[in-house]
Every structure is written in C-alpha cells, then in structure tokens.
Amino acid sequence: MTSLNEARRDLAARLETAGIADAAIEAKYLLAAATGLEGASLIAEGHREFTTDEADRLEAMAARRLAREPLAHILGNQPFWTLDLEVSPDVLIPRTDTETLVETALDLMPSASGIQRVLDVGTGSGAVLLAILKERPNAYGIGTDVSPAALTIAERNAVRNGLDGRSSFRQTSWVDGLRGGDFDLAVSNPPYIATAVIAGLEPEVRDHDPALALDGGEDGLDAYRVLLPELFRILKPGAPMAVEIGFDQAASVSALAGEAGFTGMAIRRDLGGNDRVVSALKPK
Ligand code: GLN
Image 1 (tube, rainbow, N blue to C red):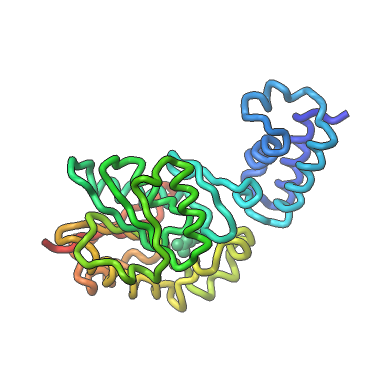
Image 2 (cartoon, rainbow, N blue to C red):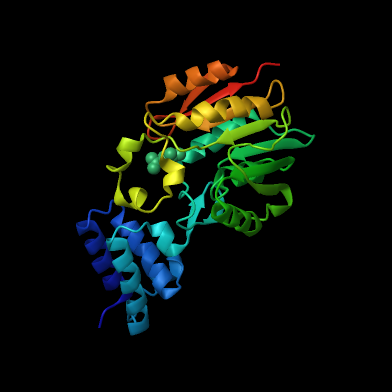
C-alpha cells in the first residue's frame, strides 16, 4: 500500500525533477486538494492508506503541474495579502512582489475619517484594490479592466472577501469615462514586460498568464505612457499614485511621471531587493 506521506514524497520528487522550485510545498498543496484535508490533518493522517480515488485525483493534477500549468490555476485560488482570491487564466496570478504596491499605497493614504476614493487601473483579479480596501475601512474603490472575463473574477473576489459593498468594477480601457479630479489614491500594476522578453519567461507565466497583463510593448513602457497622464487627470490635487514597475524601470517610469505633471517621485523595493514601485503626488 501507499501512504499519504509516500504519495507526497513521490510527487515532490517528480516535481523537483521537472525543475519546479518549491516542489515540497507544491506537493503538500496538491495532496491537500486531492484528499480534501487541511495541513494539520494531512500530517495527522500521514500514515493512512492513499485511496484509489485520491490517487486518481492527484495524478490528474500532477500531470497538469508537470506540464507547467501554474499551481494557482490547478487549485483555482491564490493567497494575496490577507485575502484568498479566485484566479483563472483570465487574470494575472497575483504575485508576492505586488504586495509592495499595496504597502506603498497604504503608506501614502493613511486611514482618515472621511470617505476615501481609490482607483485601481487594470485590476485583473482585483487583488490590489481589495487588499487596500480591506485595510482602509473608509475607502471605496473602483477597479477598471478592459477584459470583461477578468472583471467577473474581480467581482467574485470582492464578494468572497466581504468587500463588495465598497467596490465596483468597470469595463473600460485604462480610465476612460471616469471623472477628473475625483480620487484620493490611484494604483496600477500595468503590463510592463518588453515584448521580446516574454518568449524567455517561465512557461507558467509565458503560456498561462494573460498576455494583456504582461506585454508592455517594445521597451515595456507603453502602458505607463498612456496611464500616467490619465492617473494625473483623475486624481484630486495633492493626491498620491503608485504603480508597479519592472526591476530596471525606476528611472524611466519616474521620468514619465514627471512629464505627466507628478512631483515627489519615490521608488520602493520588493523583498528581493529589486525596484518594484514608483509613487508620486499630483501637486496641490
Ligand atoms: N511581475 C510580473 C512577472 O514578472 C509581470 C507583471 C506585469 O507585467 N505587470 O511575471
């Protein structure tokens, strides 16, 4: 017979051989999904027999993962900040690096007694907007996306995390149709990878994240050229914005922000030490 522990070890070894970095952790998540057991029961029941049904379920998931489909697509969800988010191939899988964008935004918009209005452009799964709303009980947010399929996921994530009363989602290109001078904070994690770089990315990203969420054009900066002047337009005077950037884009995105009229540009690094966010203020 095969025990749960053995099944888990076998899977971890196969994932590792396939070049998957966090093989042991991923094996645990997949085994949990195949058995319906949470972490602690998975350990407590480690010596019991692995049933045929469980083995079939695990094998189906393992085959997908070995073909380099992202774990989040197989499980259907991804943790981000303190949220649990539904994900699908219609949205960029939220990255830990993007929590740096949330931290920056929260620093720039401390809690206030009055209503605070937040805009997230290209919201995808809703990750950034919903994390900010979770931390700022007086904030109301709008998330825009050009993809209706992404917005369906974002709306479900708002409900799933109890934030649907303070968020709304709008299908539009960038901020088209939104009133000028209306927001206390604007954020975005736009597509910023140079087109030629995409072919060399890991298969999980290249083949499974939406190209719309990755491709920043020839130099990776196309989105910022459109986005920054638009963020400037919709912010209230004196209000901040923060955008995620690629590790080598701090200088160019800061310069584009300056051209759009922003002042007080600042750069923030992610936990890996890479430049990850540019923030700035619309002058009063
Ligand atoms: N950080 C993502 C990646 O490297 C890219 C996301 C984006 O372009 N906004 O996979």
